[in-house]
Length: 174
Image (tube, rainbow, N blue to C red; front, side, top):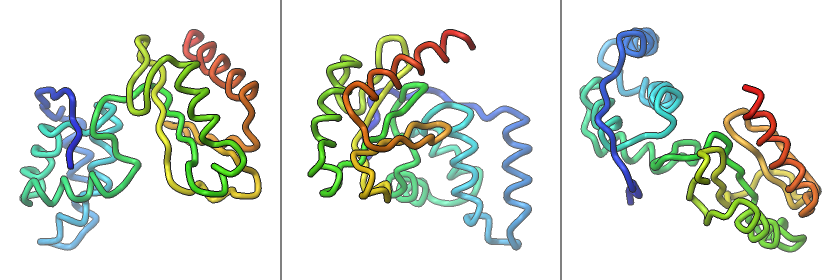
């Protein structure tokens, strides 16, 4: 279920706890569990992923059981349960995309980055994964790149190489 290779001790900062309080205040008394999704997004934005310790602390903050947090975090693909790269390349792996080369693109990304699905490059810039439908079957193969979730269609190996090179340059200028 949980696939965590590393864990970290998490202490939520005062500014983050203030944001939590703002989120919880949006919901009726006794319905603090309704704040779970936005709070998980805040935690992931702060730490880059959701460690078990972070999820446990969210559960304690909301006064719910840890399993209730794990169920949500493992259901939604926008939450990461292990460290990820600064840029996450998500390649659609459903049937229509596979028919026109998604599997070839995934193999190419693995070779180009030198990491398997779910791993992080040594420089911390990239990770990649296959995802379910990105709703662009007519423009397949497609990928999106987080954290901005920019979208790219009609992929070729050359387009993927150019995209990765542009992201490397972008990271160097920041």
